Image (tube, rainbow, N blue to C red):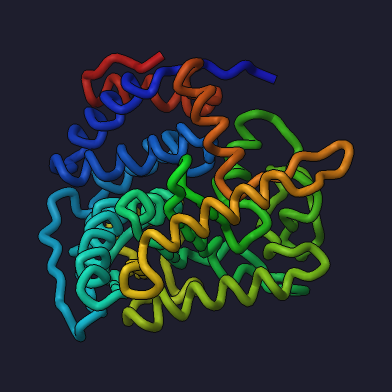
Length: 351
């Protein structure tokens, strides 16, 4: 197996920004996409981190993603509205929606924003985290093109359709749940190909819907839940309802495939953001005291001999501490792509 290279976060941030701008992204689009990718890479969510940069370069140059969008927000009711992302980068669209949702929540107690005419947004947790850092509870979901079979299914139907929720924590990093509704994300298959690793059991299927651990034979992903995959399939359907049906956008089977071959036609993707201001309910102080009490009880609960109990996000925050010191690993396939991007953008490689 080929070894990873490593790059520090500052160098990666400069490199991503330079590549995106060279591909046609304006400053806000490049900054938002870089922020989202670095969130994922710093926390160890490598499938949605800087290895997405070659894809974003391709779709910006191809015209699928508008690098200079004019996004518009329409407030529908006191706590709800729609953001038209003008086919811009999904990260800019979702961070923009977060800002609007927080503003609505400060007034109404809860703010919900549907996103229209968007594109691939990367790590859902990045946007939920932004709301938690503002003292709010955040919920984010987005559907994507079909790559996940239904429970007992033998064809692609839902996308990986992620769900993320974050809540503020007064004595440490926020509580952060960021999960695909598939057994693994699609990009995890690509990463395992690059690293020449077998997939975990019951995470992917061949073209007949039969389980496979060979990433080269993975024609579709399995829904979350293994033998109880109907739960993951149901959650994926929930994401489609919020992201597509409430926003008037395309459902997973209707979205053009992420890898192409068409990288010029916008994909009409939707997403959904909900922000909850605790001051609209029990109050921020009581929520924070409750979070502290809850997390202390969780982390001191009994663990089995070979295990350790953790709150959602604990594993990722530990990875972030290491990667700030050691750098982010760059898998061989991504390293090769970065060398090509460096030439196109006239920018130094970050490793």
